Length: 336
Image 1 (cartoon, rainbow, N blue to C red):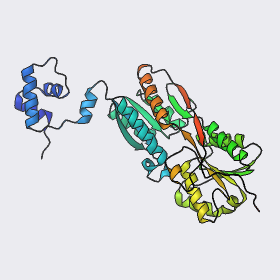
Image 2: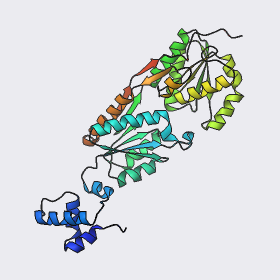
Image 3: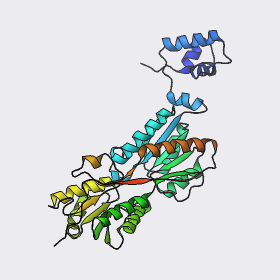
């Protein structure tokens, strides 16, 4: 069935396309009731399907909040399946609905992709997840749509709201726990030494005190990472504790340790970061650092509304975190 166009409706009724378009978009103040009735009747008869994008672009506000997630190579094409990302999207969706807004989610590899898509849909605001400082600076200098940085690293916040968590405190709380449990040799697992991961490791070292800390920088791709675990297996046998900067790496590590004949937490205690749903399902349940996803999403939406009316406002909001101790950590045992 051929799509009915506005021009078809206008020609059949002897009206201008502008008049028909105004009726479709609800701009009828200067149009007679009889004309509105005629247009609406023919639209229904011809089963006209309006373009949602066209309706939104014709309004002063689209009520659309765009959420752009960095489709980083480490997710290997499955970024929206990541537990932390999924939890964040769920919380953001709830806040958008409560505010009477729509949420549109898109994966993006480059900041340029965000710019093009956001402008096309006349978005009210953006939540940008997982990009880097250079990307945020690019967006700020190339568009006027307000946006907040969500789970990214941004040390310059002019006209940007950076909503982060106290990564250093989270790492410190894990380090203090391991020290209290009597651990003296620990491994820190990360895939980079920058941004939030760097803060988490530095916090761990502060909390761990005089204990010996080694950093393991693992490959981002799963198959390469598994080969790395195997090559470095001897390091796990020397340590009694391991802190992974994400729950995903912590759960994966526990699986490898079990396959290697090491028991968690008897032989080695393991902790992660984020308190994703994986933590309670893991065996044993994972000790981790909890951040309040609902609160973070609520702050993101509040700050977007502020940016909408006060474009010059900006700054960093640091959300608190809390250690959640579960079965994957226990007092250190002497190693032979």
